[in-house]
Length: 307
Length: 323
Image (cartoon, rainbow over all chains, first blue to last red; front, side, top):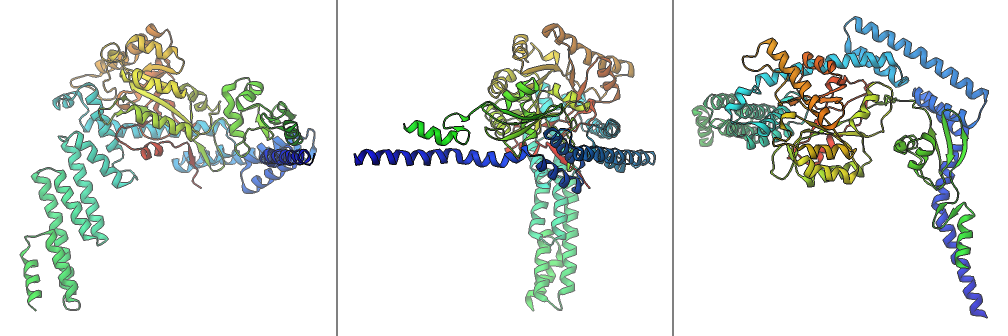
């Protein structure tokens, strides 16, 4: 009898525990979301968004509140006031946008039209004006791209000379395009170099892009030189030389950059030789790495080491 | 006895142990703009079918209730009208990336994406709540008339290589993702896709077949020795021929056009418009906003030798507004 009671009791406790456990999460979610059936939640959210300036979201929330409480004068008035405010603001913004357009200030006009749409995403005039601006800028960008296509050998004759046809020709062109489109962009230089290296690995005879890779390495070398990271500078210059694959004109141009850096380091060494002879020696040793044939630098190092 | 007790415990809060919220969804309020309801056994798709008349518009409900998942017991709202067809918000605006693929395989070419990579990319889209929409859906968005799901992405595949049918199509079917295949007509049945393959893909309802010129010559660059008149004739042929061929073979009118090498000019755009084409696609890398010019839409090239991070970086679906 006792065991039956115990069994019944334990089953009862288990049922309560399971029951409360299974409902726990859903009840919590349900309670949290139950607030969304309360118009004051939406009114309060609308007021917060309105204060922040997000009028579109505020209007949305007032409207949900109106769905929940039909014929509420306060909500109806809030909606009417906000709609009027949005209309006034968008009228003002589009007027300023048109003025900016007349003055040729297209960036400013674009910003004003974007602001208009952020208040009223259904504003047809602002959308049309932005589309016109986009058409013009897209056409300008396309003209630049087509000019690149013309300049960089996408004419059939030049491609056929390279022995590329069909898919190969297309792959080559797109690979180049992807690189050339980002050439002067704000992108990551390391990624740009990686892309160039991939292209050259696949198309080792593309001299123009070999030169572009070399030029990019030289640019990086100049940056790292300014930052006094001389070993990295040297590394970039060596890569620049390898990229042009024995092209004498380019190798000579890089040699001039090497001499330029060596000379600047030599002068730095001379300037610090009296006060900081050890630093001077470091500069000259570094200078010699850039231009190993510079006799003046060798002499300076020898003299310093004899002292 | 145990089951009874368990059920009592659960149903006192409106739940059954196995079935979630007990009843069907309970409408709390409704007018011409919104339905406010407590979700019962239904999901976003069934609710969309019931209230919006199209289960495919389930995303309208999901997007309107981002902070309140559509699950039993939760109070959600269903917007009955499209209030934001252009995707503009206070902080920025929606953009739609159009991805551009070419060939599928394992040769390691830059333009060739391996089936494994393609599957991983589709899986990434699926697992990260991107919504792959057909290119045709962009039309309403670009007119400022019809909203698109948040995180919309469009898939396109150029040229008409046979690997589209063999490798990409089965993966697209597996994920249920729509895509637009742009074919250049001289390549069809001549190394490229066979008519039967094109027809099978079109019939699936997932793939839209659209023109990508006749010969895949650059339309914006005049050929050696080509005078103005010959150039004009060539452009016309490059636009009209694939349209005619696709109409004959598939019995449907072409609506979109991808420029070979992504290059176009005013003359080419005029030709597209004269032939009733509604969108022109380039390969200028950027995502598209509702105000994008429809005849120079941007696309992001997918290269086979780029990693997943590069793929992710192309998926720009919202542009913050500069203030």
